[in-house]
Length: 347
Ligand SMILES: [Mg+2]
Image (tube, rainbow, N blue to C red; front, side, top):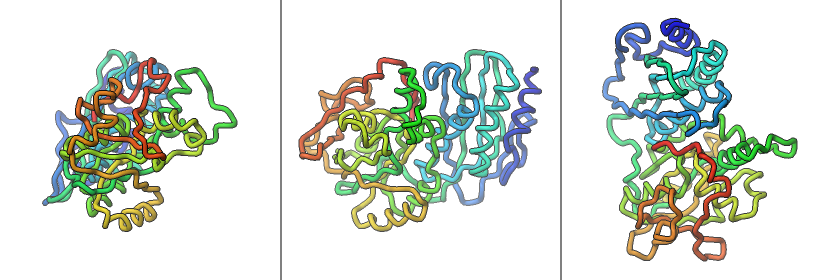
């Protein structure tokens, strides 16, 4: 299939017109008209076969996920998605693969009224790069650096399902009738928390999406805010499947697993009621899991020298994890981490 036919096929399957698209796919560049008085938030993420997803992965799930991981970054900023660019590197132009990929991408794009306005296609090892542009109010927005001492830490949804599903897949354990948890959906079809991010513009002091694991990502917030964080392990929200695991296995998946694409955010204690009400309104559980504290050397905990390599925490990173009995807990790497691990992409 020649490149122009491939691009036409994608442009037919994925919404490519929408508000603010003065010129979309088909010219040398797209011409976009941002809303007057708004700012643009831009984020880009690459998924490589064998690094971020397993060879032979379902193309429809890939189409969804390539866009979802990018939209999750916009969600973390409180931005409203508008436009996307797609750069596809394919070993061969397989029409069935392409149609399935486009279906997955289009489903999520349509749900969030996002238009595909350009990109590029090349031949090579399978690699998917999506760039998303979103709209932000003229003032405000969510960043990693705004948390204050005493702020509470919240997380949306549940944690650890995607890492659990990945471990099973890598170990060659298929779905069983006993597994009704939908952990595979968490891995293949993450739901970017866009409505939550936009709602949090009114309440949160800092926000990040959980892509590399709660410990690493909350560590980014703590460091950017010049604070430490303390997590109550007993509070970590989990699916029924996760809650049935031995607690250290569950904690390790929830703290270090990654690929959750939930939002972790901070807010002053007096915003708690409003935040829980927002969660009810969105039908999305929001759970308070800890608090931010001034860095005084006392809270070295899991981010200190005892931290296993690869958490993304620099020495002196500062997230302390408390067991239900009050003692400190430092996670071990989950047993299947010696396999190549999807979810190591940047923020
Ligand atoms: Mg991110």
